[in-house]
Length: 105
Image 1: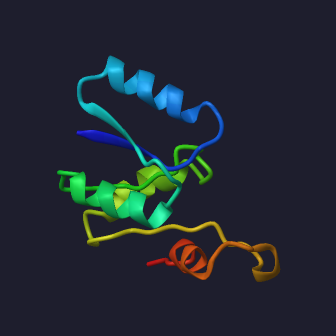
Image 2: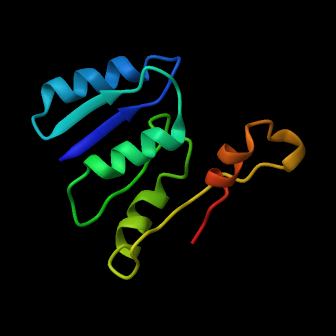
């Protein structure tokens, strides 16, 4: 099963994800009423049923090579986390959001 869990996108991403989920039986789409990355990740990981689970931002704001590399690394590690690093003076998100985004393995 593949899960799209939308968390407050303001572009057309939710509509695209919903259409993809309607077209493919093994893809499910869920949406939070209010943006909350930590809650979205927690619920998404709890719903996922697979040997390997990946969190990938729907806006693809990561290097796409990270996806295949992470998949390989999951053969050796329980978790693989990646992060965009921002200069502290540019990062105005709440503390919990910054900590979550800066966690790496």
